[in-house]
Image (cartoon, rainbow, N blue to C red; front, side):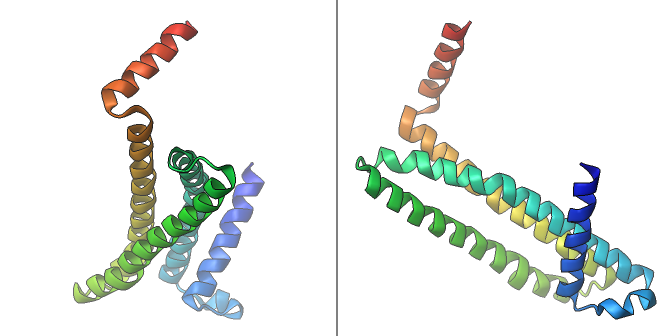
Length: 167
């Protein structure tokens, strides 16, 4: 487990170095602040990949459960679910891109933050990524609950009934 984590951290740090435009041959001449920036970018990349690995299947599963409540024919439901999944992914990534890569750098530039902004940028991007993806999951979950149970009281009744019969 530790070896796997170290490999992921090394790979994400390498990706961060490529993203920052740092030459591999110049590694021994880098300052401590540059190494700190590389570490922050690498770590946030690792966390982003971990969040992505957890949230994408959840979004796909929720969409896969929602679509058959609209469409009864299996083939049509599969095609619509796939298209809706791609659409939801594109919308959420578009929001993340607009907030994290267009608006946020301009905001930090207008605040004239130098080193703090350079370190804060990937962390705030990670927070934006997590917030948008979690919001997507929450909206889909709430819609599925409403679609299947009508309102929260019916859902709570069904859950209570399920656990009462299981005991």
